[in-house]
Amino acid sequence: MRAIVNISLKQGVLDPQGQAIQNSLSNLGFNNCNNVRTGKQIILDFQDNDEEQVFKETEKMCETLLVNTVIENYDIEIIKEI
Amino acid sequence: MRAIVNISLKQGVLDPQGQAIQNSLSNLGFNNCNNVRTGKQIILDFQDNDEEQVFKETEKMCETLLVNTVIENYDIEIIKEI
Image 1 (cartoon, each protein chain N blue to C red):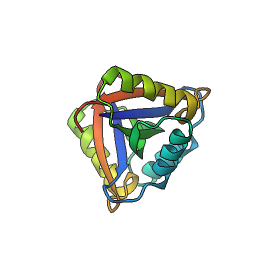
Image 2: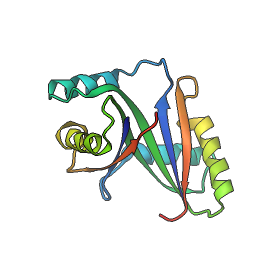
Image 3: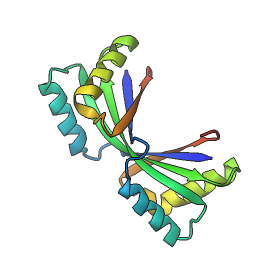
């Protein structure tokens, strides 16, 4: 079973990497884009097949290690078939 | 309209960051996880509301700037309502 954690910066937190991407896109002629934000993705493969169990464990991992909850939001997606 | 680009390393490309996360999780007592990979997410907001147009433009952005197609895979997700 696979858990995908999407981590993004909270609203109001500056995102210089996103700003740099937007500037580069603009320099290349892509001007339709009015906002760019970046995020991280962490993909975890589990041996366990209990969806609830995997979700709970992933949540615990996020809170202890993976996510800085002061400045970051996260969501967890569970995929049964890899 | 919003486009989300998920970028991940291709199979076979070493992912030291993922390896480091897996080791740290293991040290913290999370031993159920047998593989960790990391990826990037780029979230682009468009003024344009034509789904096909936005998809095509995002694809072009990926090929020219956002993705290193030698070592990375990507997929594009379009969200109509932000």
